[in-house]
Image 1 (cartoon, one colour):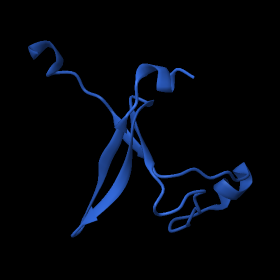
Image 2 (image 1 turned 180 degrees about the horizontal axis):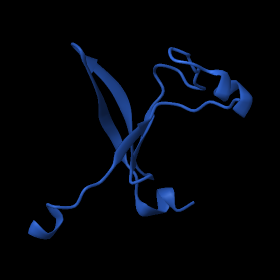
Image 3 (image 1 turned 90 degrees about the horizontal axis):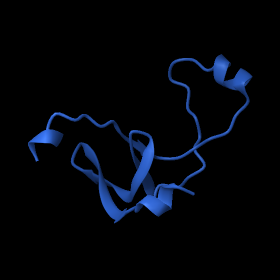
Image 4 (image 1 turned 90 degrees about the vertical axis):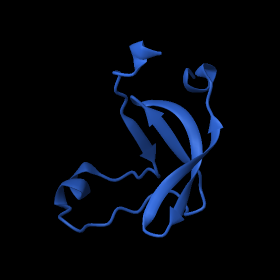
Length: 80
């Protein structure tokens, strides 16, 4: 187990996606809001080094936001 303790992995959670013309993106400034093609009760995707590894739900407790993993994806789930 010692061989993996020094390995770093970047974890990202995808809350949603949006499509927009690049010119609209370039015109955005600080405080701009991007509407996502998702709803507050939709599940989120958890990525490890940009590879989908899990699906979960957003959990808010006090002032903390977390992801509760509901499904671990197998290798075949992200090789498609």
